[in-house]
Image: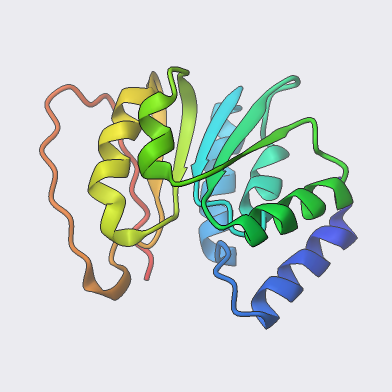
Length: 166
């Protein structure tokens, strides 16, 4: 991976006020992904591809990240960024609204990262629970963003990790 290009992607996103994963959150998620060594990751909310690019270094050989983004311009920028860092074989961008796309997915994931429309988190979480492997991890970023408080009851959940970072 081209780390110099990755840093340029990060700086440009920050300058343009595009929401990307914060450094402290990335450190926590990176530590988790480094321990579980996922083969398949689902990301809900691609933006410019920064977090997917960062997560890709923790994939097993041959692993893949599926990432969903609804804004066409961001999809195109993410595709360019992924090519710049030379990891196009590890990241699959799905363009469209996650609310429509998630119900059509029938694949299991070792990790799911939710960082999209905060008001849709209850729906995203219910879909994530359907798509996560038995010992997988669901990570929801900015759960308390703008004081959006979510309550869920889980009866068969093996493990859930929520990052409560504001």
